Image (cartoon, rainbow over all chains, first blue to last red; front, side):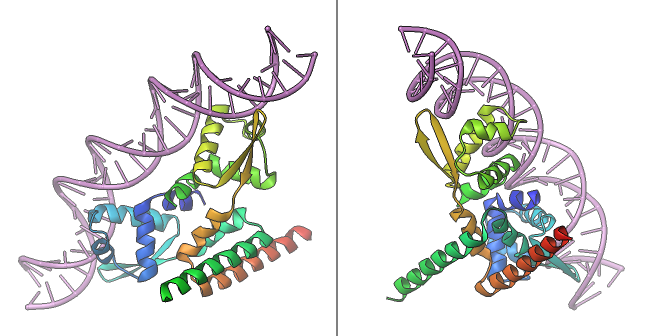
Length: 107
Length: 107
DNA sequence: ACAATATGCAACCTTTTGGTTGCCTGTCAA
DNA sequence: TTGACAGGCAACCAAAAGGTTGCATATTGT
C-alpha cells in the first residue's frame, strides 16, 4: 500500500491518472502529448512508479505499450479510514453536491 | 487537494490516522505514546501537516489539544478516479472480501 | 508564586524524490 | 537492410521532505 500513496503524492502522476481516466489505454507518446511541460523520460518514470503501485496496468503491443487505469487500490484507500455507516453518509453528501453543481451548470 | 495526497504519502502520518480512527480525539501526548519510535516534535510536525490538509480537526482544551480524524478528504479521493458504476462494483467486491475474512477468523 | 505538564517554533542535517541529459534496444515500413 | 519511430536504462543534479536538538510559551495543581 505504501507504493500507492507515494505514487499519488505527485501532481504529475495524478494528472496522468486523470488523462487515463479520460481516455484509457494510451501509449507513452500519447500521454506525453497531453503533458507538454515534461520530457518523455520524466513521464516514463512516473508511469513506472504508477505501474509498480499497481495503479496502472500495461499491455505491450508491438513496439508500443498501452496504459490502463486500475481503480482498485484507490478504492481500498477509503476502506482504511471510513466506516461502513460513515461511507454511505459521505456518499449521499457528495452525490447531493454533484447534483447541485449539475443544476448550476444547466441554468 | 495536493496537501491531502502529500499528507497521506507518509507512513507515520497514516499510522497517526489509524490511531485516531481507533480512538478519536487524542492529544499530542497520547498519540506520542502510541508511536514510541518518534520524538514528540516529529509527531507534532506530522499532525500539523495532517491538520493543514484538513485530514484532522483540532480543538484546544486548556493546555491540551484534541485531534479528530476528518474522513471527508479521503472520501473525495475516490470521487476523482472511480466512476459511479465502478464504485458499486468495487464496493460489492470488497464487502465480499471482508465477509470472507470474517468467516475465516470465526472458524 | 512556582514547578510540572502540554505544546509550539526554528535552525539544522540527511535522505528521498523529481527531473534532466545521453545513450541503448526493439519494432515497423519502404 | 536501413532509417525512423516507440520505448528503456543509467548517471547525475537540485529541491523537497522527514527527523533531530534546543529553546520558548502557556496552562495546571499545590
